[in-house]
Length: 106
Image (cartoon, rainbow, N blue to C red; front, side):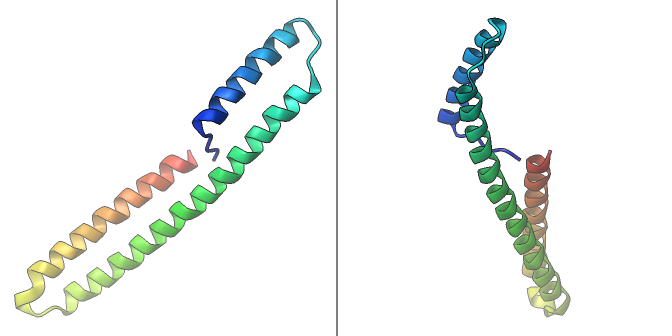
């Protein structure tokens, strides 16, 4: 996963266009390619950190869901409706986290 900042996107696009023109003239500057590579490397590192954070959020949501399910199963009859609602909320959080991880990995 790569995560470019808006400034990095602009800079990379500018460098790419410049490199394309140089490639048409068959004289590409290696410093230009090095700059693009540095931008890509920073974006890849940032993306890896964000993906790790998303996996942590997903794990936390799953743990919360497990706790909510246990609380629902052990709740007295008077508190069962609130426990069911807490479980449904936790399930929604797990689904959101799973979708976010899936989008980030693809």
